[in-house]
Length: 174
Image (cartoon, rainbow, N blue to C red):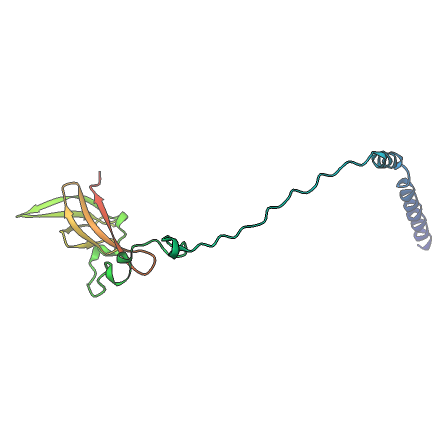
C-alpha cells in the first residue's frame, strides 16, 4: 500500500511539472503585439468641452400672478365646506351596495303616472327605481329615467379632502 501511494505521488508531481512547463511558451506573439502598440506615435487628446455655469431661476408665483406648482389646481368652491358632501345620516338603499358598472337597466315600467326604471343586479334580481332613489357606491342619486337610460349624479372625492359631483348613467342592456 505504501508503494502505490509513492507511485501515485510521483505521477502527480510529474503531471504538475508538465502542466507548468506547458504554460511557459506561446507568449511571443503577445509580446510582439504589445511592442508594436507601444511603438506607435502618441496622438493628441482633444480638450474637455467647456461647461457652462448653471443659472438658477427664482420662481415667484405671487409676484408674477402665476399659480404655485406645489399647490393643486382645484377651484376653491369645489373643495372644503362649500362643495357637495355625501349625507352620512341618510340610510343606505339596497342598490348602493353594488358598483354602478355591475348594475344594468333592463327596461321601464309605467304604473299610473309614474315611470319606474328596472335595474338588474349581478345576482339576477330585478329592482324598481324612481328619480330620487340612490344606487351605486358613490352616493349616486337618480335624477331622470328615460326609455333608454337611468341618469344619476354621483358625489366622489376630489382627492384633497373635498367632493365633486359627477354625472353618470346606466344604459339599457341589449
